[in-house]
Amino acid sequence: MIHFNSEDIPIPNIDQKKTIDWALQVASLHRKKVGEINYIFCSDTRILEINQQYLQHDYYTDIITFDYSEQDNISGDIYIGIETVASNAMQLGFPFETELSRVIIHGILHLCGFKDKTPGTEKKMHEKEDEALKLLF
Image (cartoon, rainbow, N blue to C red; front, side, top):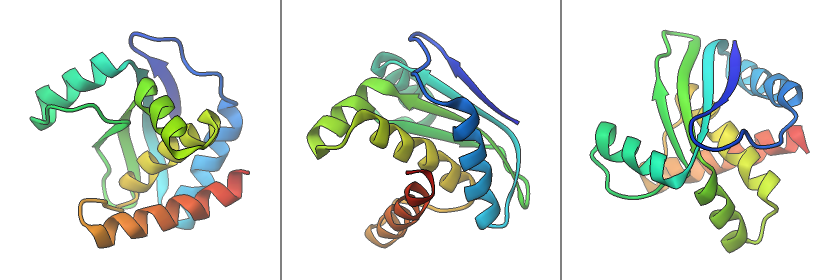
């Protein structure tokens, strides 16, 4: 179902059961069933390597989602760059936990079919993130 792993850093201190229940709830709201989802927490160095190798992007990011979904069954590997999440939280004035939750659900929303490459789709993604965060906090 949903697993939490790390590559080169410790797994952040999150309530895994609560996070799983929340992710399942959000997926269900978008009429999706959850298959195999792996969250992989990593350093900025590692996420940059993944970004360069698989996406040919030469920059740091907070999340990279590899989508293996089929029809209404969502599955994927979601890499989260913890250092970038922490930096973004500080810049935005949010607690780290809030920003990490936003990024965690951002991956689920990508698997549900939401995009964020244009200003319009990015706005819609932020709205969906905000709706999801209200369910958690």
